[in-house]
Image (cartoon, rainbow, N blue to C red; front, top):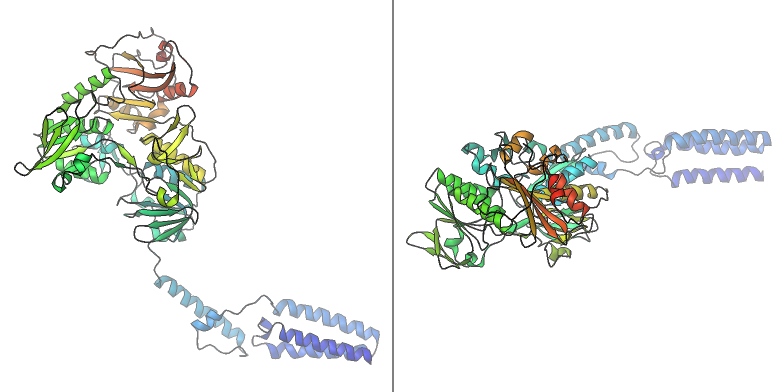
Length: 612
């Protein structure tokens, strides 16, 4: 009898446990009366049967265990939690004790699904994503190369690019080269140009359809690239991984690339000359500057270009050619003794100056700007030079170099290089954990040439690509020797690599040029106007003809084609390939090897200058 009472009490406690410990389980959502009483009765029956004998006790326990286990597994879910949002969405739904719970629950789910779907379609997504796994600040060549590398290694990556400009990523070289030699006005408006071989091309890397809407990026299942245009990142918290935009918006990120490029330098004499001079001055850099200057050049009678470097000389040749077909007068002046005097040896710089002059440009070397003023009578800008002369022009172009955009260093705490400028980065182009820098703003360590900062297209491509790969975990070091090129029209051009400084000792080897030794010819052969892309056609060839003879340059010589070696401690640290194309891998190998040379005849053989 004692055993019967004990078992009966235990069965009651089991019944209370089922009733009190799982009140929100499926068993008690409208199904209490169906299962609660049978389980209690089963417990009582088991106790009474046990009092009649051990056989019945065992039988009762087995029956209870089997049947109870089935019920427990099928109907009881202790992890279940009620969805109170259904009650909020359907305020008229029945109470918890409604016996028609099963049918009500099904109808509630159906109704909830409809409401949720309607709500999602009605609520608009934010225009600016709150989070970007990959955040790229700047939309130049380096960013383009980076997001291509990211997507190549991580096909489902979500990349957000932020740019101050109102256009998609584009290549800059044609802005000072091919675009100026096109006669198609409508094509120019759409930034389409003809390469030297006549093939039409757009400056934009990808069509608009390639990019997705920024607000859709977070929900892109297969990832994508979105461009947030017309906005500037004003603050970067690299510890909290938050970028703040000029409109106050904040975007969190996992990994960030700073590729903000640079801003054209202005001259103090121009900046303090007043608004009349300022609005008649172009600091040439982007598509907006090109569009403005192109229109101005068709409507004014005179333009003055300050600067004799790459950009200044290219624009001088382009505008000079346009002046031949109109009454446009172009004047160029600079403090060096000749065009590109800081890069080319003196004899080659003088030859280049003669070339620019033949294009119809009035070149004034050895002169710098002292003051600028606006003449109300002639409505021209009057420039006073250091040699005492004055130049009057309807418009002024300043091309005196670039300042890297490093304003984010203040908020981010990233280290800047005191000598070269830009963000100091390690071998993987990382400025700080999960923050990289590429292009014009990256100051990197060159294992052959020391710490450097490079402002050219090829470097932007290679450094951007490497940074993008490293953002996906590649961990690669930057060792590439980038090249750059400049074209003075379709007939004269050069490519350079390494340290090309006219203050260094140089050795030049030249030969007579053929019709194949021009920028136009190399584009016709390769079909590619971006010279850094034509290197695939290059092969190392051995010279079989007589070796070139080194000698003192003659200033009246026609430098058709040749190679200029820049030497430091008997080691070649830089090369200029003058009208010599598809030989850049050879030059790159020479610098990489870093050998000492007593006789540069052996190196000159590698460039096959005397082949027809």
